Amino acid sequence: MKVGVLFFILIIVFSYNINCSQKISVIGTGYVGLVTGACLSSFGHKVICADIDTSKIQKLNNNIIPIYEPGLTELIAKERQENRLLFTSDIPNAIKESDIIFIAVGTPMSADGSADLTALYAVLETIGHNINSPKIICIKSTVPIGTCKSIKPFLSKIINQKLIKVVFNPEFLREGSAVQDSLHPDRIIFGGSKKAINVLQDTFISLINKNVPVITTDLTTAEMIKYAANAFLAIKLSYINEMAQFCDKIKADCGVVAQGIGLDKRIGNLFLKPGPGYGGSCFPKDSQALLNSAKKNDMPLHILKASVKVNNKQIKYIFNQLLNLMDNNLHGKTVAVLGLAFKANTDDVRYSPAIPFIKNLQKHNCIIKAYDPIASENMKHEFPDIIYSTNIYDACKNADAVVILTEWPEFANVDLSLIKDLVKTPILLDTRNIISTEILDNLEFNYTNVGNCKVK
Ligand code: UDX
Image (tube, rainbow, N blue to C red):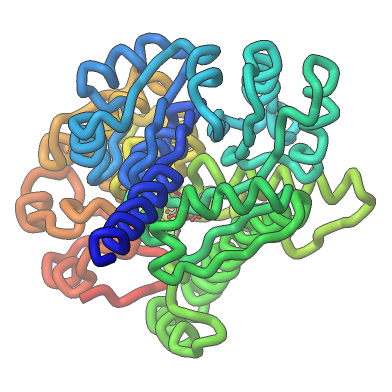
């Protein structure tokens, strides 16, 4: 009797484990796809990460991670050792070998501001031509509202649409903390077919068991959640950046203002740091895509439109701060630019405020000496001809002005008296409010930051 009960329990545990481990492919190995694939593998699934970029796949198969993302190298190494995570450029085979296909390809901004869906539809076509059994297609890429609904009709031209179910599962990870964000998300959103969502809930059961809130809804609402979240955060940033400009004018301390308002739980203290304006692969693109979508639906989104305008003006404002510090005389001057990534802890320079800032310096014929701990290589594609220094002090040597554009911790801890000795003139613009104003005062720097903040 006892043996029978034990046998029964073993069967349940065994079959539960089998059901829990799913065959998944993730197509697209950028910041989202690679992190998603590694995390899904860490949940115990068999994951194939696929990409048409053969050199990227070759690197990954040689344990070289093509992006900088804290914790990712270690996670991928561990999952590969467990034989749960594979990399391939054979997308048709990855499709055939999996029951769930996550699509995480880029949807960059086109010239007209709309999202370019070429890569997404190319993957869908490949799925259509290689499908060998029923599949769940789970879209991770941020797509314009209505895209997910159009996938079944699109694929029905190639295959029997009963073979596929579509789910939209937006990604909220931030670059620089992507692994942490994926393993400890604030929420999981599923939009689409109920049956498919049930399967995907098993995919994420490790998180759901940790009480991560789950929202299940229709495709369009899920698409809207992703855009509305990013747009809200972008608006919050433009709001504080505009307040910072006003604080500069009236000599109020925007850091204290942010602290004072952020303690109100309804406002919250995150995303209230004034700076050079938001950048990155999401906020600029997603704000524009949502505006486009709204325009198509005859719905002017006044607040979002204003926030985009404020953000575009912010970098000009920052540049004017430098001009003021230099008595409007920048022509031919040497400027040390510290920080090229759009934020700290990433090598990503997409829509980095450093790009328009450097372009403006070039218009003034400045000699630009740039330094970033890890993003210089990526910035060389945009600016092959500026000087790339190998450390902060080298960049600052003989500079007429120093500008901090990214909040890397090593900039906050810089030896300011050494900098003062190295530069031609002690002029500093801190667009991230990370340099101690107390020390700058003591060393008699001519400086400014964003929003007249006192920094300890
Ligand atoms: C963002 C969203 O946070 C994430 O949920 C979504 O999935 C993708 O887009 P990411 O672009 O990686 O993530 O960076 P994030 O940390 O959100 O910062 C975006 C921009 O805002 C950066 O340019 C950053 O420097 C700026 N920022 C952020 C500020 O200027 N001040 C702040 O207080 C916070």
